[in-house]
Amino acid sequence: MILRFVLLNPLFVLFSSLLYFHLPVGILDLKQIASVSRFELLNCGYNTNAAVATVDDVIAQHAGELAIAVSTLRTSMTSDENQLAGNFDEELVQCSLEILKVAGGMKRDLTSCEARTRGVFREMSKRLELYRERYALIQGTSNSESGAPPFAVPDSLSSTDVAFIVARAACGEEHEGQDQEIIATLARFLPGQKGGGPGHTTALFPKATEAVTRLAHTCHVFVFDVCSAVPRRALRDLPSLPIWRKDASTQDALSYGILPQQYITTVGEHMLALVQAIEPFASDEEALELADAVMEGSKDVALPSWREFASAIGSTDACSEETVVGLMNVRSLKAYVTNADVGGGADSAEQLEEEEEEEGADLSATALFTNKWLDVIGLAVTGYLLERTLRVPHLSQRGCEHFFADYSYLINVFEALGIAGHPHPILLHFAKLFSMPVEELTFSADERSAMGRAIGASERRIGLMRGVESA
Image 1 (cartoon, helix red, strand yellow):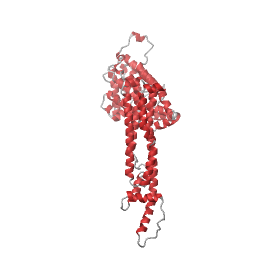
Image 2 (image 1 turned 90 degrees about the horizontal axis):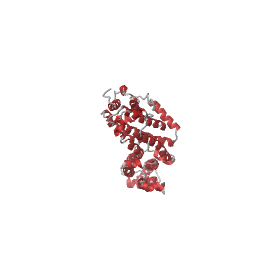
Image 3 (image 1 turned 135 degrees about the vertical axis):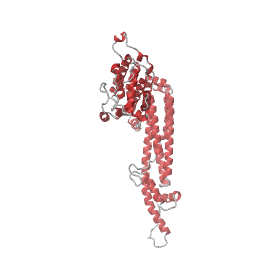
Image 4 (image 1 turned 60 degrees about the vertical axis):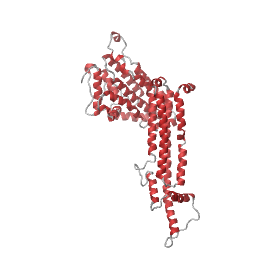
């Protein structure tokens, strides 16, 4: 199995290259310890802003190079969606999650670097206060001719005293109050200190932090592309299926009912298979800790599917970014759609919050991480299915029955997965619309807001597909 994976899967070679480029991240902590120690010894707090900016630029550049490597890997892997979906297996998912560890390791090392640097700055600030007093007394003794309090210059100086005197001579500017300025500069980077304080502390490495966030997003997109390739291929040709225009026949009446079609069973089986694909990776505590640390913002990778859905709705209100985010957000939809006639889903935002709290309390860290990705992929699959649905030009009554069977199957899959917020309210709402006889089709969206008007436009689009001009 391992030999097959190495020989047949190009991801292995590219991933190995990525790990090679990532090696400096693993020793970042050792490098920063040495560099901070040199700064502490040679500069003693002087030129702090320049030193911090230099380190910030170096780390940001390194994170940017890693993001480019991941993006190149993603482009290579996703250039042929058919091949990616056809070769999909658990190893692909687990290797893509290994890449997410790269961002997690970078964030961990950056956090460690920041913590140590702040600790060094705190000690240097204290020493500067002490050395400033000693230096002033020494200068006062050496320059005083009369009237000055006696002060004996020590026979010997410690290495730190010497370092401070040398650094002051080499790096300082001869003007009154310069030492106090250096102390104030150090204090800006220290929480709870003068010049800083909770919520006001100057960020140590803002460029690096932003670069690591971008790296994490790039890794999110890569994992998402791997995990969503099969559903996207299965749903791609949905609008052109002839079954939507087909009318009922005598043979249909003699059948045992309408079964879910292959495209939707492929999607459902894939969602269920993702559990077994993700959990082995998440069972490793170290891998889980690193990957889970950079999961913030992972839902953003599902937004393109919902932008496509908003575009298919065809209304101006639907295409604003605020509305797109609102359409994807389960909590924001409860005031606009009701699903009392269709099973599944939380009935209120409060119940959804209770579900999430119960999920957090009852599930292990492995299951929680798995559910985070199932939530992301589930949102994207839902948005893409809704978009593909609205692209169907005409829908017969028999086609509606097929859609209802397909939607009901996917709803059951989401209920079986037990992810908070799934099935999505709009998925349930569309299923309800497909279940209604055409003469009883009614639209219920509250159109007093942009969100309501967008949902109302999607209802009218389904009505047009079914031959209802207006409602």
